[in-house]
View 1 (cartoon, rainbow, N blue to C red):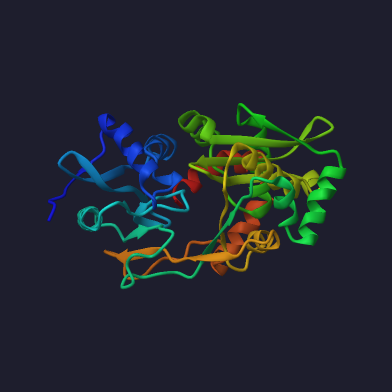
View 2 (view 1 turned 60 degrees about the horizontal axis):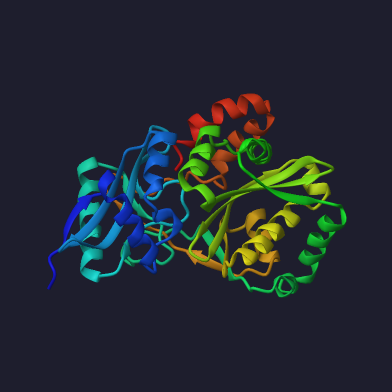
Length: 343
């Protein structure tokens, strides 16, 4: 039986770490080494990128970050601000080694709980929440067939956007994207991320972090920031203002992501996670995507129960309504200080 030693990723290990991520079937875009820099620099959270090695070869990895908030608790998570994470492994023994190391780290840090955001639960005996589903669907090489695979009513909305004369461009920067996204989340009553966060994402991941902006008569209507990983495309942050709703801009926007991704050779469209019972959840179902439950794994440590800090919590509805009434400029200034505590 192999003996696995667990350490943390150093600067000299980044290339090996990312090479492992590329060849490990259950690794995701969110396992990439670049997220360590993004989380540390954009949010100031400490990270531990655990890796199990034997004879110089990596057998498993587990990226972790600690979010310690007076408001929302103290969590060790793989990975905050990401929909997927958890253990990525090519060997069961290596997976067990980083798993044990993570639990020991959580105990040492005296966190409320340890959280793995994996596509598939690996700890049936831990706590779970039936809160999120993800939406993933194959992409075809033929965009005519991709269009016809969209249900009729939703397809009509895409064609409405096309008929309105909408166009899409790939942006080198994030300014138009930020303005569109900030407007959208403010309308929803949600704190916005910092401009620096989005700049760091694009700087760190380069062409694998793509910003698409939809325009009408030369003016930006809505934007989406997408990640590319292997043959997958993941539209991750998106939004727009009133014009997007009038012109079916969001519908056109996601079609353009799909169309361009197919031309790029992508074979899977990952629409990301949404909470059950929300408008985003219904929107993705309307595109013909079947929800796949996400049962994240939670192990309690100092905490006696999991805190309910998601927006559907009735106690947060008052704050959400108040946030919507706040001037956008003030919300954009305060939002990043709040959202960094959420993870």
